[in-house]
Amino acid sequence: MKYSRIIGTGGYLPPTIFTNADWEKRVDTSDAWIVERTGIKSRHIAGPNETASSMATQAAISALEQCNLLAKDIQLIIVATGSPDKIFPATACLVQKNLSVPTCIAFDIQAACSGFIYALSIADQYIKNGAVQNALVIGSELMSRLIDWTDRNTCILFGDGAGAVVLQASNEPGILSTHLYADGKYDDVLYLDNMQLGDHVDVIPSLQKSENFNTPLENMQPFIQMQGQKVFKVAVAKLGELIKDVQKQHQLKPEQIDWLVPHQANIRIIKATADKLGIPMEKVVCTVDTHSNTSSASIPLALDVAVRDGRIQKGQTLFFEAIGGGLTWGSALVRF
Ligand code: ACO
Image (cartoon, rainbow, N blue to C red):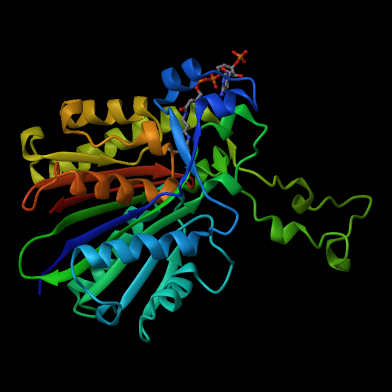
């Protein structure tokens, strides 16, 4: 088996829809501002009993049903998430328990909005080297619990949800290539502190403040911090470089791509990326208007929408790309 192929897709969106009008009631913003700058009109918000693992489980069930695979057939589960239920065990282990998958490999990966691409790339290696036959690759995010609901600069951008794919070993080409990148020098443009580490500042003697020592833990912020304009500029530049790398490796021409399935951060970043790829917006799967930015869940969710509405067909060539905190960025060229 030389390749891994996507044989099933699934998605889960919490039933509660939160519109721009709902944000207008909470912060000083307007539907017109949000739509013009981001393309977002509404987002889904998880209920009090929903978690990254519960949403991931629903998305996985829907992906398994689509390809008629059973939980017992899965040997690898990777969940990409920046909003795990617990620091440990991994969300992937909780999904394994929920689905009753027998002993398998299960772990989370954290690459912020690029998480799904990273997870897909890792699962592809496991399958190509023969270690596993079937893998569940999931992106699941509870962004609504990571944002400051009073900060208009960030709160309007994000939503909750989960998307999943089933990847299977195949003799036919599926994942044609993945490209992964990171540059930690941009760690301050988009980040979320781990407040767990700061919670004990007052009780652990080695962390207590002395006159000439200030622990950095005291400066931790409980919510997503973002330099929006910088993220925007670096995103457009890095995705442009990435596209050149992929085009060079595959001698890729715009007409060879049937669908761009981008990370759904912002319609302006998506348009700039489509432009750099040389493809029209009619060939771009856009869900940012109704899903908003669901971080690592956004690509598998968009993919699932376009598979289920019949736009994406077997045999077509897809291009996935994402950029997120880290900064991390990456792409996957996929024969569906
Ligand atoms: N409603 C109304 N006004 C707002 C809002 C809001 N929700 N948010 C900010 N403003 C105001 C600002 O306070 C500022 O006011 P001022 O001129 O009086 O100071 C004004 O709007 C302009 O603010 P900018 O930050 O310059 O607005 P910009 O055009 O850059 O748009 C945005 C902001 C949408 C965040 C943009 O920078 C962006 O999309 N960046 C990319 C960020 C992103 O996608 N992050 C997601 C995570 S990373 C990823 O997934 C790739």
